[in-house]
Image (cartoon, rainbow, N blue to C red; front, side):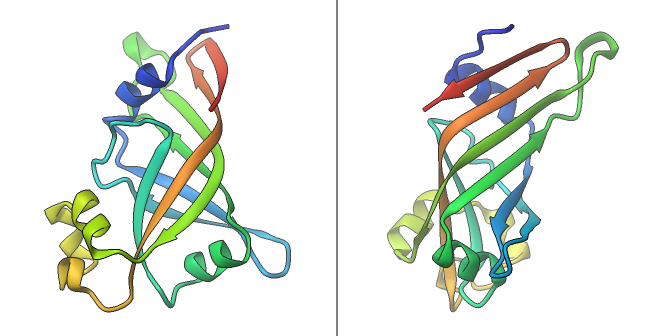
Length: 144
């Protein structure tokens, strides 16, 4: 079993733009949707994503903050499988424009044309409690 550190995980995540963010639906199901990590990959156990206040992801997090993230790297070395990362954590909804600016990148205007001034903009912060990873034949788990 591999012994990757949180710093190692951060380095792996630098080339992975999208994660699948999973939440719990009102009926008890699991809903997943792709979310961009906005290039915010100096990973310390927190991931950040933008959404709009009226979306299901926001209402589902308000109801139950326990979420999951899954990420898959695009390339493996010498034909080996890419890295897979599964994160379990708690989500917090942030509505502070100063925090928006801290995590904003210009590419986000593709989804939010008014930038940090977009009406109903919400920043989702996912704080990891457990990370499981598979890297070729190595796998491991970190508890945060």
